[in-house]
Amino acid sequence: MKYLYEKDLRQMKYNILTSTKHDEAVRAIAERLGMSDAKLRMVLIRRFDMSLLENLESRWQMGQRHADDGDPVAKGLGYELFTRFIPLVDTETMQTIYSDTTAMTQEIPFDEAIARGKEQIREAVLS
Image (cartoon, rainbow, N blue to C red; front, side, top):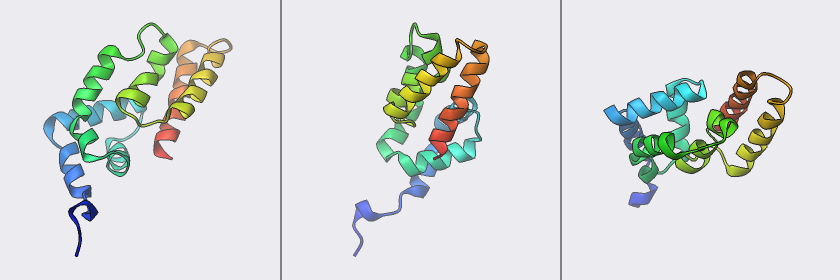
């Protein structure tokens, strides 16, 4: 006999992510990370529980409004956005990426350093 918590919830999670509001949020997050929305959906289904997925759209909106105020490197990378509001990257990994990117801003143009940092974030999300 299978218990409810043993049930495969992938289809239910997918249904949540493809609903109108959630789909818009997933597409915006994927665009911000520079990845396809299908790959992001796979990561979200694998890593997040139902509760987190249900609140994804509101977490995305709140993160855009309140995350990383005052620090241009953190805002460019989405430091708090992707660790606290939408936890796709663990804090230690993000701190390493943030430190590396901050050091890069001293040597190369700011936009290029942020682009390299986002590439590292994308790799961390997909791993």
